[in-house]
Image 1 (cartoon, rainbow, N blue to C red):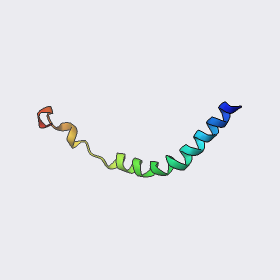
Image 2: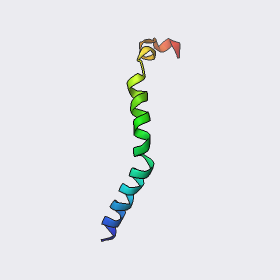
Image 3: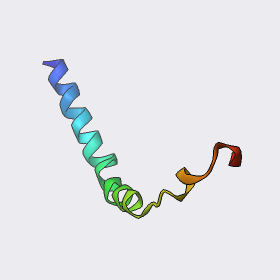
Image 4: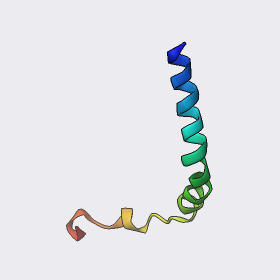
Amino acid sequence: MEFYKGKVAAAKWFAQNRLPLLAGELLAAKTTNLEIMELSEDAF
C-alpha cells in the first residue's frame, strides 16, 4: 500500500510543479533555431 501512496504523491507533485512549466518549455523548443549547430567545433 505504501508503494501506491508514493506513486500518488509523485503524480501530485508532478502535476503541481512540472505540468505548469510545459507550455513555456514547448514554446521555447518550437521557437529555437539550430544556427548554433552549424558552427564548427573551432568556434567553441
